[in-house]
Amino acid sequence: MDVVLLLIGLAGGLAAWSLVEYLAHRFSMHRPVVRFDPIAREHRRHHRDPLATDLRLRLIGHGAGYALGAVIGLALAFVMAAPVAYGVGFGLAAGYSTYELVHWCSHHRPARTRYGVALRRRHDAHHHGHPGANYGVSTAVWDRVFGTVAPIGSIRDRRPARP
Image 1 (cartoon, rainbow, N blue to C red):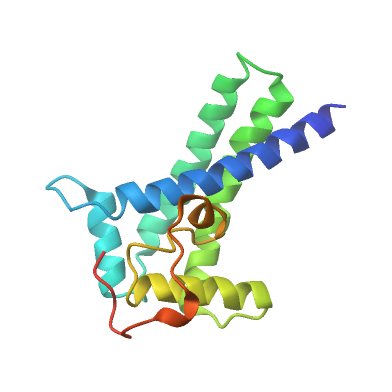
Image 2: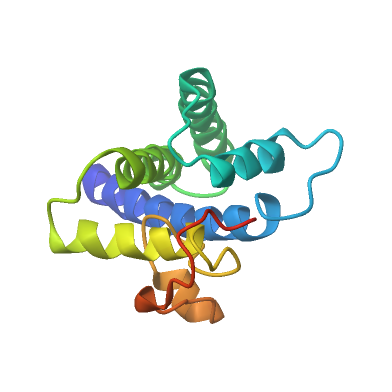
């Protein structure tokens, strides 16, 4: 039974991550850069040069994601069944790592599946002409829910879009 509860929590954490990914990309990474805003500043740099990857920041992000997932899982264990809580924490962290991998691959590796091609084309539209749309990198679900989908075939310009 604990395994089932853990899997339920994991699914919930992965789903929650997809919403966090969308909201963070839309409202944190695409806001005007202020003096002490390393996230928006790094994201603006990414839009200028999508192939530039800072491995240190990526590794810090993964470590922070798993540390935060552990803290969230432990905190949730006070208000729900521990296996569900730990599953949610791990799901959030695994969702972040999946997002990072999908995002990195969308810029650095050829897509090998129909899903990969669709994700890459959606993200390409975000980078080239529609920075105010297609915020979901690993899924289009929240873009559909919140009405921020840009048609894939609507890329106006191949120059990087300003965030």
